[in-house]
Image (cartoon, rainbow, N blue to C red):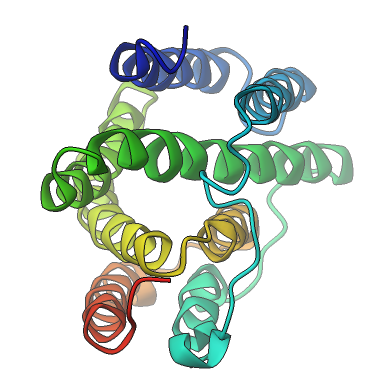
Length: 229
């Protein structure tokens, strides 16, 4: 049924995830055990679905061959550290921090699978360029839901812009290497380390700019230097 109605299935997956995760944020917060439990169940469901479809490799859950071609993903490491630039701050209790980290691990995994794995692979069969663009843009636009969750306008707009750039980089890595693992790991690290962000004004605009520049430049480098695996 999933393969027969793949387009509809992908759309429903994305809509369901956005609605469910928004509900969790609004009603429980990301540092609550209920958000962790719900997102963990979504992750388990997606893993079961991928195994059931026999598409583990198809959706990129494999290691990267020849990482040297990708400069050993050093730019991704730099991007993953941005939340530590303004210093470290413990914003929650030990229990809340644990649940936040577990939730963010699931969120990074889920979002890479549905935006890069399911959505991109579904569209790439018919139009590769459109698939790349849609995967990147929808990932960025999806963050507009944060406005409904109480975030301020300007920070949310900045987040949308750098999420589009990051989404573009991730989809290029997935397309070229056939592995989603580097994207999942980086996404998880960005999310997890956000809990220790001191939120200083000195880095509030520098970080989005850095992510955009590094993401676009790294993606262009990979696009030019690396052949499709």
